[in-house]
Image (cartoon, rainbow, N blue to C red):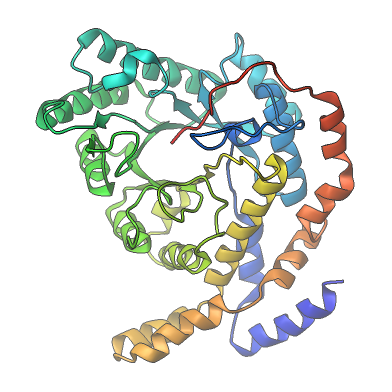
Length: 410
């Protein structure tokens, strides 16, 4: 059904000088990591609306993630969260993932749900609690080594709710000491991605409150430490694409947690609120890929971080992947030479319109063609709905008794 639309689009793009062979190759090579916690019952801080088809354990989560990869073709890895995904045998878990055509990806320590962390984990005034948190991160380094993961992803809820609650500089020193110990324990081919968040659950100040703080810690640690940009962790109006460009230029752009925010945080499907912002972020990434920073951008971890509370888990993840693919495809269509010329000559309207021309291009026929060339159904969401998998797991899985925690990683 998409062939005619693709033929028309291909002709239009050819007239604009777009190298479709190069664009399609880039789209086929794109890789997006999905989160294990996105497949289980999790959601807002107020109520978890349970779904009969939701996964109950890491094995069911991986089975669901395999469906996303099956229909999109670009999601071969799954991030795990410890202890939510803790098992007795991680070798066996990695083998099970491999049997599904998957690999285990970033390892995320949980440093926010234990009662001991009420006043902080690695920045707690109690040295025993700091030791507990550091030991857990070291455990996650060992898990990552066992499963072959090269990424340790760190987010801290640490901070204070009231002025005077803690000494800000002392807490900064505690954070630096903890990160340094964990950094020293990592093998030479592992990266530490440091996430930040400007508020919540600490409402006075968070110990890593913005990208500059994360950048400072990462710079002092060394080349294996980089910054993780979560799209929902910024004040309203923040120019995230500028942050991305700056970090790329500094060699410290480590990865993304893709989601979207309307107000306070990041529980929403990526691309659902401000798709133009998502496009502008990918515009900076593609620009860097085309220049001397390509080696830096090649290692960026593209990860989804969403907890789907009212949408179906698998459908929402497929939708997120498709939205990311759209933004990337649009960014690949920007005429870089014309844009650079307009920038250098001060033609502001022309420069902006070059971006808008790419953004306003309906790339869905292009992506459908790419999927077909990859041996996939041109519409992943439709293919999943036709597969019968949702009905199958709904029948097989029963709701767990009792109320569980939200399982939200920040």
